[in-house]
Image (cartoon, rainbow, N blue to C red; front, top):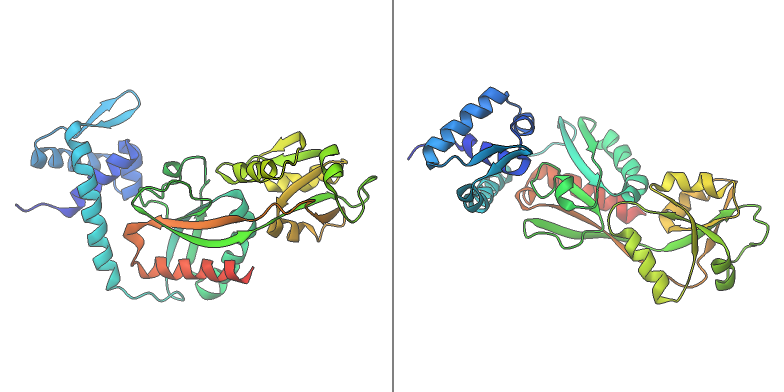
Length: 298
């Protein structure tokens, strides 16, 4: 049987996006063209495949059964083709979508952008939120190139690699009335705290580290991003516990002082993950190596 491989890409886009509009945008075609391709697929596979419902296009039982094999086959084919391609970073003109958590976006991404400006000026980055669910990032479908942060319970189609570890430190305002150049356990527990509640699993790691050491804290303010913290600390007598790499940057702020945690809270991992279809992609491998170099330099 002869058929157009692009029809299988239409199938994958619809399966992952569950929307004709979003699938057409993702593939760079018009909605009528996508609908025409879907009709051809229905004829070939003798099934409606996707049913329009109130909240989008829902796959039929047959579409659900076919999806894993089609996705795997296209991924393998992409890998074979990409292996044969060469990559010149200085000449490359492309965009990568990355999904870093707020820590990685603050600590790593600026240095990555600076390296790209010199080594691959034609490569652009689009940053999308990490979110609570890996599926929301687009990395499971492959529409997002890389996800960076704490990767928990990844599906089989993701490759996960350890990138770096970081520790924790405390921050108070420089002229704090009761805290000098050290911070003991009793002081830590008496202070009110600013807590960062980013999406993902990093917040769980901090709470678990505090629990392991029996260290209590009274949270007065919870914020959603690290950038908010120094502004709150600078005008209060509060304390915050942040990753060491963020504290290194805050050390340049004369309003603040960085102190060791009262007990050793250990380290937390930072990981990078990508879809298996990009395993042999030369451009993707080059970008991963660049990010690894940036992390290593920290």
